View (tube, one colour):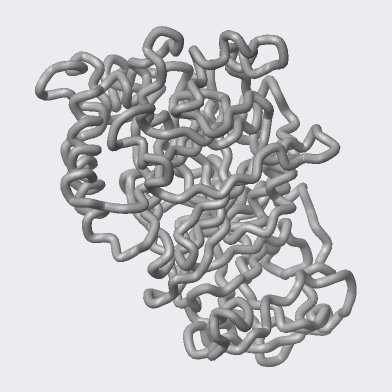
Amino acid sequence: MARRSRLVAPTRREVLIAGSALAATSACPSTSKPDSGPRTVDPQPFDNAARIAFAPAAVPLTEVLFPQTVSSGAMTKASVVLWTRAEGAAKVTLRVWREVGSDAEVALVKEQALDVPADHGNVKVRVEGLAPATWYSYAFFSTDLARRSPIGRVRTAFPDDWKEPLTIGGTACASYRYRPFKPLEAMAKEPVDLWVHTGDVSYNDGAVDLATYRAKWREQLADPGYRALMPAAGAYFTWDDHEFTNNIDVEREGLGSVLVSSAITTFKETLPLEDGPVWRSYRWGQTAEFFVTDLRTERKGTTRGTPQEQFVSPAQLDWLKAGLEASPCHFKVVLVSVPMANFPEASWPGRNDRWQGYQVQREQLLSFIDAKGLDNVWFLSGDIHLGTIHRVEAVGARRKYFEVCLGPAGNVNPLSVVLEPGYSANRADFFPPAQFLYASGAFQATTLTFDPRANTVRVRFLDPKQAEPVTCDQTVKFGEGA
């Protein structure tokens, strides 16, 4: 992507000074020791930015051209995917820059003219040639740079040799019935390096074709919570059922059906994802590797309980096993849209919609992790409309594996009534203390700090409706209490 020569001689509009630029990134030298502050990278040798006179915040924001927000994802140490939606123009211009501590100047990294698809307006592009562990700002502009989208920020993944603490946000289950999504607004204010969504990003129930799926996505992403969170940091996404329709059976419906193909198309055109399968992994140095799984489109309910059982395809299961074994990272974080844990059989419904209903493949995966002696495999899940910290199994050697069910952005679980005052006599039947360290049915934001130095994961749940929003702040160690 060649940078245009006009950048050498900025226009008069580019030198206007107005508004406040985003906060400058940390200025700690790259040679800093771990105990002297956050490590940083000198990005210039990687991205060859050109310092220019430009005040992005001074450019008028327009929802006529850019009716929704911006978002970023699929972050690696050298690249990110950026997204927005535009209307009423054949082309827009993307600019990516680093803040330099000035309201009037930026270090411009990329400028690119992009086509706007006439049928849906979703503009998505992978930006290469970035520096690792670096915060970048970005926005989409009219071709004359006179109007802009919201300004987004994204951090690239750590260099290969870094083993630094990493803080992420997490969410799941955002039903349109409970908009606005206050937990997402709360998470947008947290100092996270990235965030993850474990499914039900949009409740598209009732959509039947491309047009109706696109309308559902546009309505969902107009929510103030998504508008606040998506520009705040980069994300990794997977899907569950509501991106298709409630309790979708893809085996019966057929991958090639209009409903399923439309759901897949709109998921991938609306979110900052890479092409190809949903399942893939992303490393952040030696701190954490995130394994994003697809637990919806490959399952075959007709095989459940047979030796050929398929919750995920053999290819995906082999990929996950090989990736976990080969990962050099301290934490192996598996994003699963439905829980891995075995919950109390007598009280929990819906086992066949979770790993618990596919014990053959569940055992294949967990036995592999056991046999290889892989430590610090963590599961982050959603679907059940609860925020929890629990053990994958209540008794036995697998008590050492922890799962965090990310607090719902907006949906309820009837089981949460037993967590209310006055129901303590029944609570242990559903949430036995031998398995659950924490459980709540509140709409909450979740943050997790993976600290390889301390070998701990700090889990926080925040309820934006409470005067004291932190409802749980617990630090957990892999294997603790097993």
